[in-house]
Amino acid sequence: MTAGPDALLGSHRRPQLEGHRDLCTRERGGTISSESRINDRIRVPEVRLVGPNGEQVGIVRIEDALRLAQEADLDLVEVAPQARPPVCKLMDYGKFKYESAQKARESRRNQVLTVIKEQKLRPKIDPHDYETKKRAVVRFLEHGNKVKITIMFRGREQSRPELGYRLLQRLADDVAELGVIESSPKQDGRNMIMVLAPHKNAKPKAKATTPQPDGPAE
Image (cartoon, rainbow, N blue to C red):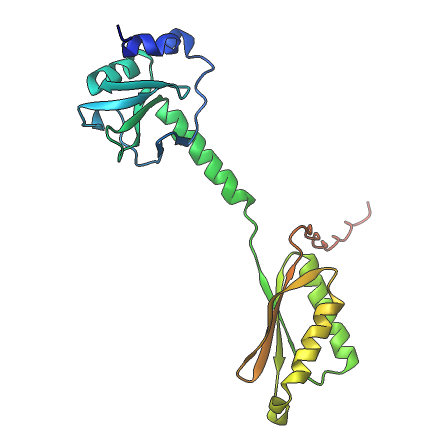
């Protein structure tokens, strides 16, 4: 004689559920989303039921699945509506949504905002100006920013694109310890453009804070 869904769930009734409500967003056969149908919104004659810990209960009537969810103080959540029959899981849906929202907020908080800075140079830049521009590029890369380098050609300089290419390559070599070429030099009208990016594993350098003046002496 085949065991019914009550026997298969066994120890997952309410008295034994404490400490066993670990939730995951992906179950065998489907993905749980915020738009999943739950409880009496699931309008099919039967479902393939998955227990609270991922155990396969089997195909049961929707009435039995809803009764088991109610007895266990859980929700019946449709995780694979396209399956035949649909796959449903017993879980604490409110807790699942809360934990999902918490993870989403934490993920947004940990996202790093990528900033692209820009430096413009002339093909025949003098040594002093070059060093000033290079220091700015170094500072940007140290702070974890990408840098767009633009060489501006004027007049007859446009017939000498190799000057711009050599200058960009020189700059890339000079800052190679801090960054790499993300976008190789390319002509864009009267300009030549290259993009440098900090090394992937480099830790951004904290920006220096301006010291506050001491208060008046007592």
